Length: 213
Image (cartoon, rainbow, N blue to C red; front, top):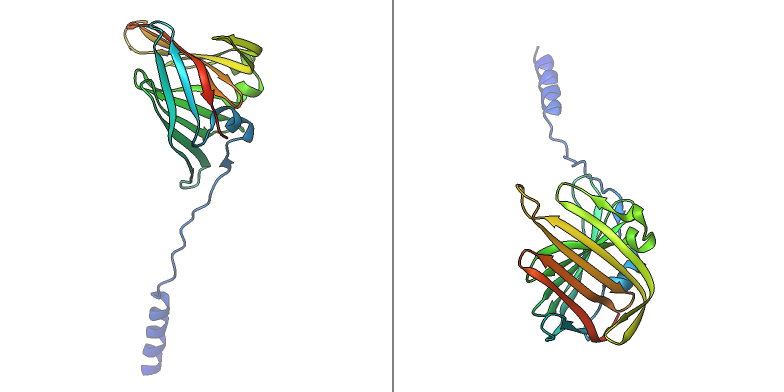
C-alpha cells in the first residue's frame, strides 16, 4: 500500500511541475523607408532654408535644429515600422517626420506652428504622380498636383519638383476646411508651402538654402 501511495504522490508532483512560459511573440514585415524618399525629405546638421512670406515679404530662416532620429517600432504580432524625424528652428515649421507604411509606401508629415501636423507627401506619389496617388476619406482629400522638370521660383530654377495638396475638414457640421499645398525638390526639400484657412491664405517660398544629406 505504501508503494502505491508513493507512486501516486510522485505522479502528482510531476504533473504539478512548472514549465517555462514562452510568449508567442513574432514580428511582422518591416515597413521600411525607401532611400529615394529620404533623398527628397531627410537632411542633416548644417542644413538651412530661408523662405519668403509672399504676403508680407518677410524672410524666415528654417535652420536645422536637431536630429535626425531613427527608430524601428515593433508591436505584438504586427509590422515593424521604421521612423525618422528631425526638427528645425523656425517661426513657421517645427518638425519633419518620416515613417514607413504598407505596400512599400512611406509618408512624410510636416508639423507647423499654425495648422498642426499633416501628411504632405508619400512615396507612392513620388513614384507614380498620377490620379492613382489621390485619396479621400472622412477627413478630407489628398491630391498630387504634378511633377515638374523645371520649376521657377524667386529667380531660381528647380529641377525634379513634385507638388501635393491636402484638404482637411475642420468641422463635422459644415464645409470648413484647411488646405495645404506643398512643393518639394529632390535633394533640396520643401521649396514652397501654402496654407489656406478661414483665417487667411499665406504662401512661403524658398529664396536661399544649403542642404546636407
